[in-house]
Length: 292
Image (cartoon, rainbow, N blue to C red):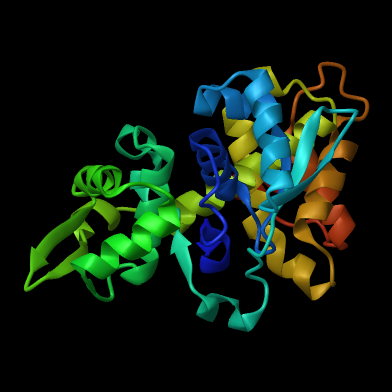
C-alpha cells in the first residue's frame, strides 16, 4: 500500500475521481505495482462513481501515464499496473514513498478534500518525510513555488492551507512557513496483517469470479479461510520455484469442477494446492487430517 515519490510527482493533473481511484486500487497491488481483477462495480460502490465515470477515469489515468491496464472480455474486469511503483527490488524503498495504508486515507475527512488539496497533502507528506522532520520555507518562496506548481492564485492556495490544517501543523514564524506532520492524524494505519488479508482476500475473490463461482453469494468465511492458504504455503511454493498466487488460482479452478452449486470449498482448494506442491497427506485446517 505504497506510492513512490516518482508517482506523486505525476499527480498534479489528476481530477478528484482519478486520485480516489488510484488510492483505491493501491490497496490491492503486489510488490510490482500490479493489481489483478479490478471490477467496475467494486470501485463504483466504494468510490460512489457511475459506471461511465469508472471507464472514463481508467482511460484518463492510462492516457496520463499513471497506469496501464488490460481487459478480460470473459469476466469484464481489469488487470492494472501502477507505473513507476515497483517495490520488488532491494533499493526500491530508498527511492522514497508515501504509505497509503494510513487509516486517514480511508475516511470522509480525506475524501471530502478537493483534488489539489489531496495532492498538496501527499506532497507535504513527501517533504516532511512522513514525520521525520518539519518543512521550513520562506513565505514568499512558498507562494512562488506552490502557486506555480499547483496553477492557482495566492488566495486559493491559502484556502488549501486552511483545509490542510486538520492534517498538519502549519504556522508562520520569522517570515517562514513551518509545516509539521500531525502524528495523531497519520499514525493510525492498517496493521500488516490487515493489509495482507485485504490483498489476499481480493486475490481469492478475483479467482472465484474468473472461475465462474457465485462470488456475490459467496461465504465470507470460505474466502477468508482460502486466503489464509497463501500464507500457509507461500514458503513451500517459493522452495519449488512456484508462484503461490498462481498455484492458488489453479487450485480454485480445479476445485470447482464437478461441484453442482459452484460454491467455494476451502477443503477442496486445500487438497488441490497440496497436490500441486507435491505435499503428502498431513493435518490440514484446524487440525483436520482429511484430504478432501
